[in-house]
Length: 143
Image 1 (spheres, rainbow, N blue to C red):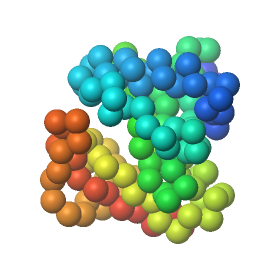
Image 2: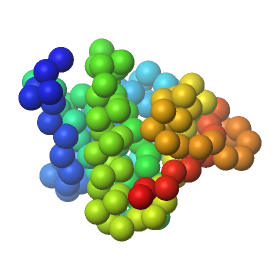
Image 3: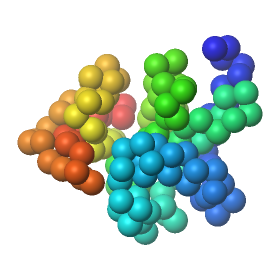
Image 4: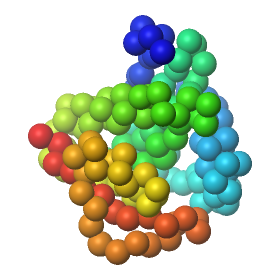
């Protein structure tokens, strides 16, 4: 994978909604069986969204809420384990720093905890379930 073939940008919910929803639908609703009514919420309108394309194909997304919660981070199956998630998370953290957020947090699926730990996040609290998937809250200082 060539660096020049990856494009990460801040997306606009009003104009990029269909592209973002497509990725999230494939990853969360189809692959992980998250109920449709749990995937879409009122925060989509106000959050900062991020969209990753590889060779002009949309392959990953994430969002950052104003309270510092990173969420809805999704990479299409065929593009995992290639560094896209890492680059996306770094981009989101840079954006959080520009917004002067001191801390960020997320609800990591238990299987993804090692990924987030590699990027400076620390698990906090007990395991809990969202959409029947075990999660833990993870915290990180932005700067």
